[in-house]
Length: 296
Image (cartoon, rainbow, N blue to C red; front, side, top):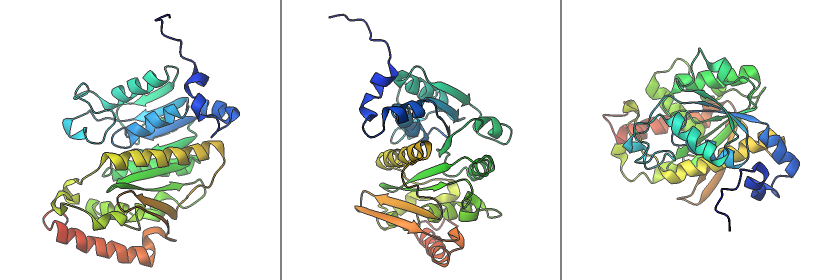
């Protein structure tokens, strides 16, 4: 038997996708470009899962480097990658799966000066931005809305994931979350309650002192990040292929593996909805009770 490495063959590599997608659809996915801003807890695994799904082109933005505290949940975080730029590591990992990938990199992260180039020719956007980077997130979603690009977000919450998609012509990110003009702590609360209206995770926080939104700190699990990828990539594939129901704002959904619960949510008006306003008030009070010094 020859020990020579078999040359990479795209259709051999993705052959087990066929059946759930047709060969023609797989060819279409190969020609699609997906943008991902942020390659940390969810963004990194989004990239690798989309690559294994056969997406052939990416635009990637990330400015950070790997640290030891990333090990529990970030797919690119290993002893061999500490101190290395996340974008370099993840590009290497993706190209180790598909060496023919067409990847544009934005190592300064996404910002006002490069956002148009970042989204140029993009067929779908999948959000991987750090939870607390609200200015960058709002600007990216606003640009997607202007350019008619569907944008999907899946956020790790507890041992589960909450998700929704913002479609061209539909409800916008700013309309739904209503963050504009609020201080950072309030934006953090609005993002939390907006993305997970059911708040399934709030009943089993084992150590409340670890939740400190004012210090941009909170616990996160590897299971939740992996669940986010399965959800976000599935939504992206539906968008790219033009088939399957898209759960679009003000609709969303939350799956919590710890509580064995799945909930579809609908909040007309987003965080302006009376139910949301009540939940925002409850969460503000709960956060103060959990960690008075860090959540005021």
